[in-house]
Image (cartoon, rainbow, N blue to C red; front, side, top):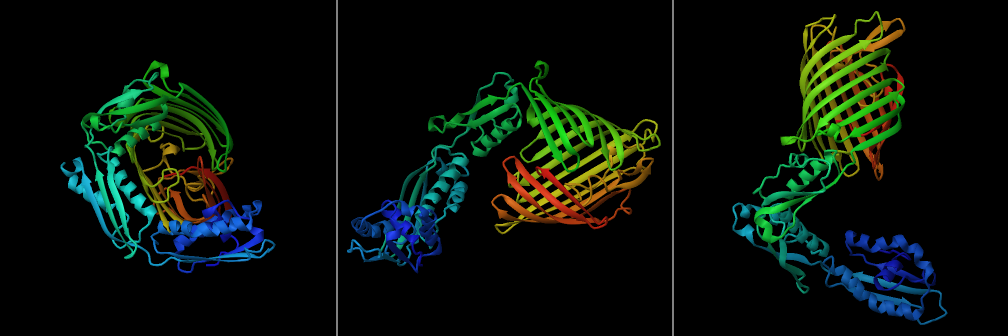
Length: 590
């Protein structure tokens, strides 16, 4: 490998301050060095631009030449080369007036030392407790330097850390490495590894101790915990508890941990340290959406409503095609992660040729588990179309449930996993149109994420919905289906796929009883955190399965992994209408 002048930087960084690069030339010859170590050597070239800032004498260069072999041998030893032959040849160093000083460093790393034996010896409670033998096998399986592998100092340290991390995570937070040794036989190029770990005692949870509570009741903390006294310690139980506290909206910060003191092992206290949110939060924000144009939003959150164990969120939204008001009331956490809820909302939308006044009253109960969110609700809905000749107005009561299950690697920017949501409800219409007639509504959605190599990502989505009723008359438009837009069929405008109709002001699109949309997307990282995408969508909303049409669109886009979540933009072409649509969205929709 000839690194030329940048290799001088490696020579200097190993030995002394940076050398003046204009007065000499350094050649680095290391033909047998593996690519991983070669990358380490050449990485120093990134800062070679600083080499011209310091002048050194021939005497100083001679001193560096003398100590460089030992420095290089230490570096090579970390990668398992204990018999390296290093030679340095110099030219022009004896002539003070020479401007052609040359240093040639030749490295012959020699054979690489490999692992001849590995001995991992357990001690402590893990050797005598029920299930300990299985946990020992699990811990040993995490060892990263098996027999036959090349010795690497970094992997040797990382393997010991992985062993301890596994013990700390499950039952043994006081575990330690009691003794370790790597015996190197340089003549035979073999290494014998010995590690003795002491698990210490098995820890079990004790009582929960809470600090930082002033405004909110202790029950709001205890009801979010699944930890019981006497339960075996796991780090996951602490982290899950901490995540639920942070997601509750009541606390600005939450830390849940223990003191790994062996004297407390039989009933170690669970320490919960909290910083509460302020009682009131008022937010104003402008925004823009390609679907609804410019908007302004005002929100007020109150975390101790009328001194009760309830919190409220009131929101006012004013956009080009939508005006709405909502008030959501949510109880503090109840046992088994349940929360009661009540919400009211009213608004007007002007979409796809229909101006609709919507009102909704909801009462229900929500449960937030680690990967699953469940919702049970009763809704009273009214949907009035502002057209005296229209028969699209509807009123209904519906009772149902909704479940969202996520198993993804990252909830903000998923690259691997599956997210599934489903909703089903039974209702009845009331009022002058089809009053008293029942209906059933079902909706399901699945999104699959999978990486292809290190740079490519794939995403696929399928959504299917059906309202089972003899006629859609009297069913509120908010319960029927329309397609098109950012999270549907992107080549078509927002909710412009549905049942076509005509009114005195022109054409409109009403909701149908059947929905099916699908999407496939391929993304490639073009810069850190920025992905280019190509996609194809298909879908429609219709009054029946037979009337459904495969409206297709395809296009290109970009996705940015921003600090506030994914930001996406796209340009899509609609095959059926021969039109181009574009959009921008923030966040991920499951």
